[in-house]
Image (cartoon, rainbow, N blue to C red):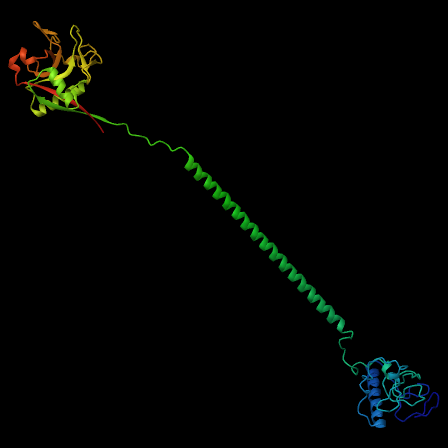
Length: 357
C-alpha cells in the first residue's frame, strides 16, 4: 500500500507508513484505539509465527518480551529468538524490516537501538501485576495496617491484664492487711481479757438461822447454861418481841405450856439490871429491864423483884402465867427447886443454836 504522504510502498496490510509513520487507514480514539493496538499486536505475533515458524515469544530462559526492560547494549540485548535476528516495534511487538523507521502495524516510531522490551506492555496483554507491581503497594499498606491494629489490640489486652492483676494483687494485699489488723486486734483483745484481773465473784452473805431446842430437866440455871454449851449452843437470848412470840408458839405447839424454862438472862450480885449473857456467861448488850428494851412489856407484874424474901433472885425464866393469861418473863434464884420444891418436874431450859446456810 502506497503512503499518501511520502509515496513509500508499504505492505498491503500495513496501517502506517514504514518510512514516515503516516496512517494508511482511518484511526480511532478511546476504546477503538485500544482495539487497534491490540489488533496490531496480534498481527505482529502472526507475522512472527509466519516468518519464523515459532509459536512463542520467549528467549532462551531470559524472560518474556512483554514488560521487561532490557539493556540492548548488553550481550543479552543482542540475543535472537531461537537464532532469528529480530527488530520489533517498541509498542506492539511486530516484526519490522531492518531499516524500518515506523511500525507498519501501529505507527510507532522505531529507532535503531530500541527493542520491544522497552515498551510497556499493553493493558490486558502483559503479565499480571506480581509482587513488584503497583497493585502490591495498597496490599502492603493493608497488611501493615492490619498488623498495626493487631499490635495495638495485643498491647491494650496486655495493659488491661497487667492493671487487672495488679488491682487484684493490691486488693489481696489490702484484704490480708485488714485481716492481719483484725487478727491483731482480736489477739490484743484476747490478751487483754486474759491478763486483766478477773472480777471477783460476788459471794452470798452467809445466812444464819436460829433454831431452838426445849428440854425438861430439874436442874439449876447454872447447870442449864453448862448443858447448852456442851451441845455447842447457849441459853436462849431473846432480843425482840417477834422472837419472843415465836418461842411461845413453839412451846404451845409442843404442849409444854405448863413448864417454866430457864433463859439466858441474869444480873450480877449487887446490880439492879438484867442482861443477856454470851457463850462465856458474860453479860452483854442493853439492860433487859430498861424501859426501852423490846421485852420490857413482857415482865410479870411488879417484876423484877430481885429478891423473894431473904432469897436473892439473879436469874431469868419464862412461863405462861395464868393470873395474867399470857407468857411472861420473871427473875428467880439459881436453885429454883431448892426454894420452891413444888416446881420439881416442872422446870426446863431452852438452848439456842445458830446454823449457817
